[in-house]
Length: 412
Image 1 (cartoon, rainbow, N blue to C red):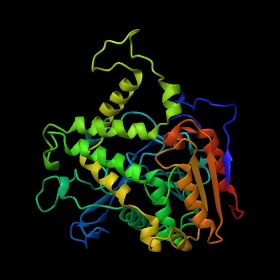
Image 2 (image 1 turned 180 degrees about the vertical axis):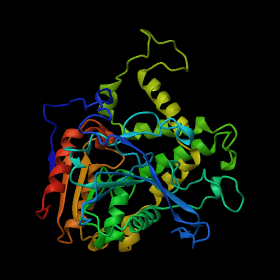
Image 3 (image 1 turned 90 degrees about the vertical axis):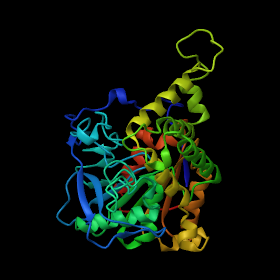
Image 4 (image 1 turned 90 degrees about the horizontal axis):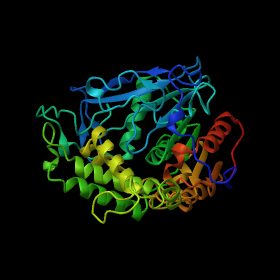
């Protein structure tokens, strides 16, 4: 278990102004989402951990690279809270039809996925699927309830991370894929990756967990509670039945603003904004936007409300809250739960992450190692808080490449 320092002190990560276009030799190029109805309207409904059931169920996913003849080069990528199946490349459907919400920019992990990149599409076949209850192509609260023909809204049943992983397993079954070479996820995706290693240990050869742990902290629960309160208190929320009406965009924007505070760190805030005023040399002594950090948060809130669904935010954050690997698999004992793990494990935390702090990531790594199971744990020294798993491309990329290419047993 090691701390990995930054090279050359604090540095700015590669920014999106220099992103590679679809014709770049290390880009996966132009992509189109795939959709499959895994549960038909007349099929046995997909049963959920909380007791509900859903039918029909459509899953949206994307793939990159080629499946080899042996079928043993498959890596499943699982996304975070507001992510989607579009992990790399340039979506050809962006800005069109029912996908107007998606802007024309590369996937959320485009810097890591592509030919010759750490997640090398010349060697591996990658699959990324949108989770149940989201608003990016997989069945969720925006979709019609077959019993009424109207959008589900809050009539959509509660979902959990266990439900997501079981549905992902069903997708892989549909695609004829048995065992995964690896599963990779960051943040909420990291909890899905852990659940894969626990729920389907025989199907996962390697598991990579980034900026995540076995459960969300009480502080994380509190932030999610305030975010949901902002949405539920919006006068346009209408009990979740706002489709076709004025949207609860102010509540959703406030929830996203709060979320962005947890994704950054105090160091990142100082480096990015300091206490600089926004477009002025002196304060106006008003309750309007005065500081650059206020302007940034307001922009993030507005833009998020244009592309995400408020009900989906409620469902996804609640799934995040409920997950507790020790409770689910070890009767409250994380070491007992981790006895189930059979895959080689890589865990990466980031020094200034206070949503999933390093001490909690290390706790999970120690629980795995107490079972004499191979686990590699690295704490990357970074100023960029929780978002570091999306922006510390060089340091993280090297770890990913080494772990995926190594055939050796890991060690703690």
